[in-house]
Image 1 (cartoon, helix red, strand yellow):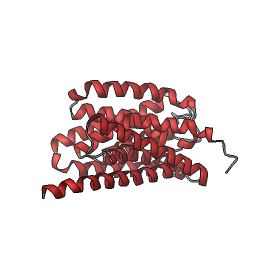
Image 2: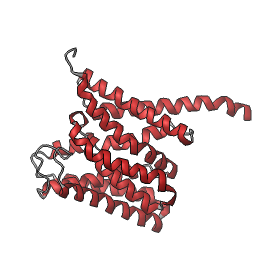
Image 3: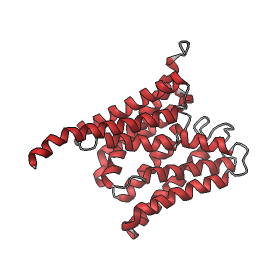
Image 4: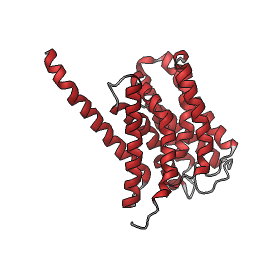
Length: 267
């Protein structure tokens, strides 16, 4: 392990920071809206689009469902699938708001099951499913980050300047476009934990202070997770997800401990 070149983690860590740049504010909004599993559902739908492009041979990459070779057909298919899911959830939220969470869950199960069926006769189907869920962040290189950096920057500008004008439809569509790229960079599991773990850890902290705290939690989670995966030769996506979940618990517990004395005084 002493011979490991730690500079190899720079690009994966940068990928994690790019994902966090958009996922932290979006995750706090998701938590505020109480639609926790929307990210998991739309991420899975985006992954279904990637699988469809693979099956139809629109993607020229033979070894991954990610961004190893960016081709327009794959990106359009994944984005179209995610946006279709977002529009469907917008409609269902207006039509049946009382069961929206249940419908989000069904959409996730449908997309996951459809993906399994699409890859049922693919000799590398199991590997592709694993890559989509757990991701291959350790193999991300600098050339893969240029397009996501530009798109994420545009998304952040829209979010911080126009979010007050977003209805449910605008939020879902922006969310879908963000998740489409994120799934290809880090996988479904890290998309979910990058959105929810920092948001939970910063729960109760409002404004820019809470946002900065959430960014710090996310960055620490990616740093510790990547270091642990390199040091102990563990799957990087799973390691990062576990660390982020642990940090969410620590942050939540710490916030609860600080609030208890005040609560006792009120009683």
